[in-house]
Each structure stands twice: as C-alpha cells, then as structure tokens.
Length: 127
Image 1 (cartoon, rainbow, N blue to C red):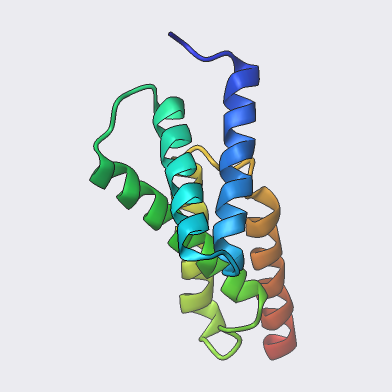
Image 2 (cartoon, rainbow, N blue to C red):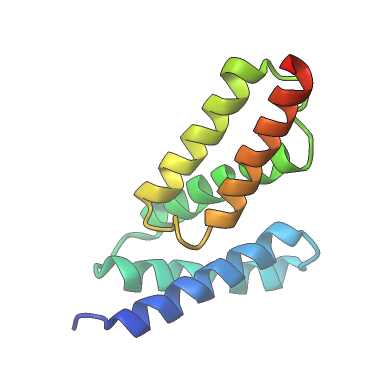
C-alpha cells in the first residue's frame, strides 16, 4: 500500500519530533528505547519495505550523527577548526547525507543555521 503525501508528511514530522526527543538527552533508558522503536517503525513505513533491525538502526544512527554535527557547529564546538576546509566540509557532508535520507525539508533550518555560523566565523576571521 502506497502512502499518501499527507501520510508521508505526518510520518516525517513524527520522526523529526522523536529524533529531537532523543537528542535532548533527558530521557530514561526505557523511554529512549520506546522512542527509538517508534523512529525505526516510521523509517520502515517511509521506505516502504521491511528492513532488518540492524539496517534501520544504522540508518537512524547515521542520520543522528549528522544532525548532532550540525548542532555542534551551531553551538560553537568547532569554532577553532580551520574554517576554509574542515568546518565547511563537515557541514556539507551532513547536509548531503540528510538530503540523501530524504530529510532535507525537516532539517533545512538546522543546515541553514550551521552554514550561517560558518559564514559568521569566516567573516570574523577573514574580515
């Protein structure tokens, strides 16, 4: 059964909300497990296929790592990185991976904020 655009949008929104919950870090282990399970089920629904547990885990972990990277740029954790290469490469790799996962619309603001942070730091360093 093919999902409608509205169903896909609802599922994507749910994934975004659940990933945000996981990234806050204040959930108990049992709550994290429940949220992770919900994300896995939604990812499988969006992909329209039955994926194995390990495949879904790997997809979610990879996406979360890229989201965390962008957030860490915004939070200033990479302010001392060589701006012309490493930082912009990190942002580009994260944005590319998020886009490839079909989540670019959901994380557009995060990607934009990371790029804005890089531009600010570049302007500050290079004038």
